[in-house]
Length: 396
Image 1 (cartoon, one colour):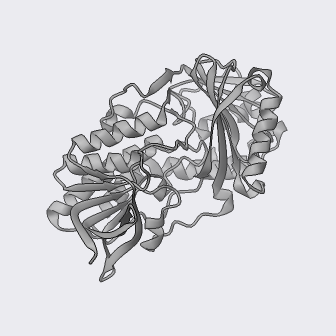
Image 2: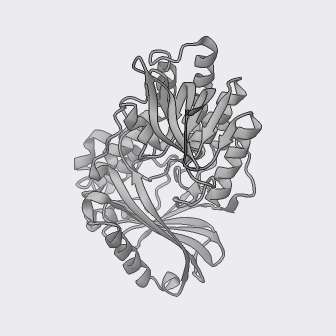
């Protein structure tokens, strides 16, 4: 006989978006169960570990011991390595803090548990449960033992692969051009500047960039994201990264003490993130910024909205697609326009030559941008190199 659990809100996945959803659903009076297929929340790390900080207060996160470095801003290196310095407030979702991502994820899960959510580890969803076309929970396994979890509301927070979304029939397919293959080394004995997160553009990373995020003096995350449609596999991504390191003495002398790799979606957001009994949040709903690959802030912001709507649906006994439009409207109003515009910009940028990247960075030298948006950047570039911006007219 299959064991059965019951809860109001079931969250599948204990990443930042999942924990934030669980926390706010519990804070609003719902019984919440969050399951995580791994034995340890936040590990293994699959992240550059950089994030902005201005959104933390909005979702109720208190900065903690998981912060390694607070940086002043970012440096963007053109292919000829002309440098554009931008301050932290203008730099976007990847710049502000460099963190220990496993510690950050655990802190968010602790917040969720302290708010009343129950957490089960080593528990993998294996299928969704459906009744009359509505999602009513999942089948799961813990330590090889199958059981069912019944829930009024199921939340798919299971990353960009999102099996939950696929099982539920939500549109989560990805084209190769909408995925990056990423590889990162944690390197010691390097000469990194702890004041900046660094980004290197151009053919050193086709369709993406090389990053250096300082963890402390002499220690940094050095990684690469390459558009999957432009390479043959992870081995080629590694070659690009190794070639870049070999050409930069400050890092060529370093020693690698950790390696992580994985995929990142760089797509536009899903057209539908909810159906009867279910909502998707975070990477599962394609909330990663297509231009930067950063998803922590967006996932947490949407997670708060998702948790509040889930709890309200439980109280009103209306866990329907129609009621979940409150969630759809909420997260889309907050995030969708920027995500979509950055996806369009990503599509254009992936086709640019190194010469064009050099012109863009050159045009921005000495220009004060109040906010670093695609529109503001192109306006500044247009003033010096109008030929460069012709194919970007829709953004001006």
